[in-house]
Length: 254
Image (cartoon, rainbow, N blue to C red; front, side, top):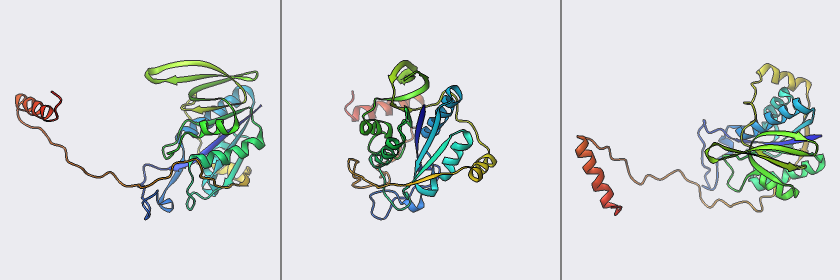
């Protein structure tokens, strides 16, 4: 049995994100790229399944050499094979529809029994990768998964709902699952082990075509515009209560 895990790089929100001169996207050359947090959980869930059942784990990344560290980190955790699709995020605009089409090509070649993806990414404007992949591949999809077991040609999954509610579901394989959290927190891998994986492992390289069709077109991107400032209420409790009542009345709420 084989599991394919597509991963993607996203802007590091700790660093400043700059809008480009055209005001229709980010300045890609100024972005610090990191592994999508949910994809990290998808990789961990894949490694957990490998430890349970001995499945083959294939990790696929798009983004050129920038994605090598994420790939070799996955190898250091236990991934069996690494595939890199050479798409340069620093110069090319890529939406989730385009990424899903790139991953679709690799997945059709690999013919896996299960595809694990991160449930979402914070820079995606046009849908979740997992749901798009499922549509392109003609497979069932379940998102917000926090646990997976494989029994025969079915997967038993734990799906999260709002309010802490969980549901157990069974889905026939092949299928696509959107992982929100792995059964255990993603394991820490020392840099030395990642460097060792870089020396002893290898990445299979493939070329990818970017097709943005189907995704949203950004008309304008800008920083939030200041429309007013907060009013700090002071005085006695009665004074503050009276002022709040005035504000509520002025808005026509009472």
